[in-house]
Every structure is written in structure tokens, then in C-alpha cells.
Length: 112
Image (cartoon, rainbow, N blue to C red; front, side):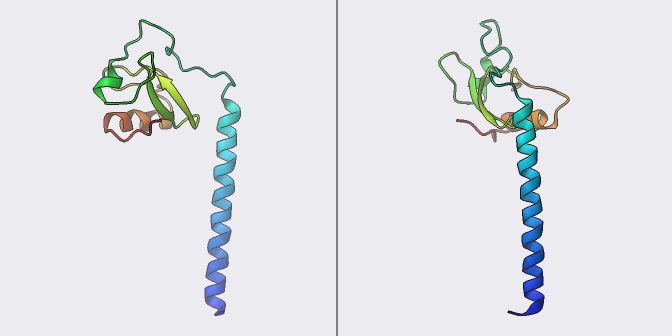
């Protein structure tokens, strides 16, 4: 094999390996930060606004909670979604939550 091609392939594979390990560490860190019985805020509260799930055409559970995939904690969740598209677990200071809110409003949110 040509030495230049071999060097480029090796460099690309090393970079991919570093990125993979970095992503793995970030995932583990997020999972370790989550509590084992982490329940989304408001998911059991009967007075919470759940009209957003219907408005944004999200699949729901028996209680009317939207079934979404949480970016922040990398897990499936059933959470109330307000009429404006804000999930009950939304944290305005977290970039993953901001992206989730945007995805709900633009019909790109991952569901289960």
C-alpha cells in the first residue's frame, strides 16, 4: 500500500478512536450523574399542563405524558409537555434541554 495512504488511514483511525473514547467518557459521566430512580419532575402531578403532547403530536402514555428521549440523560422518559412545548424536566441552563425544546417545537424530537 502507498505509504501516504497508509499514514492518512492510520491518522484517521486514531482520530476516530479518540473521539469514540471521548464520547464514551461523556456518556458514562452523564449516566453516573443521573439518580437510579430518576423520575421526571411533574410526571405524577395531576395538575401539570399536558396539552403540549397533543398539540405537538407526540406519543403519550396512559397518563397523557409525552414519551420522549431525553438528550441530557440519554434515556427514554414519559414527561408532561406544556402547551408551549416545554417538557416538565426542562432546565433552561442546560444546552441539551434547550436543544430538546427546539426539537419538540420543530417536530424533530426523538420519541419512543
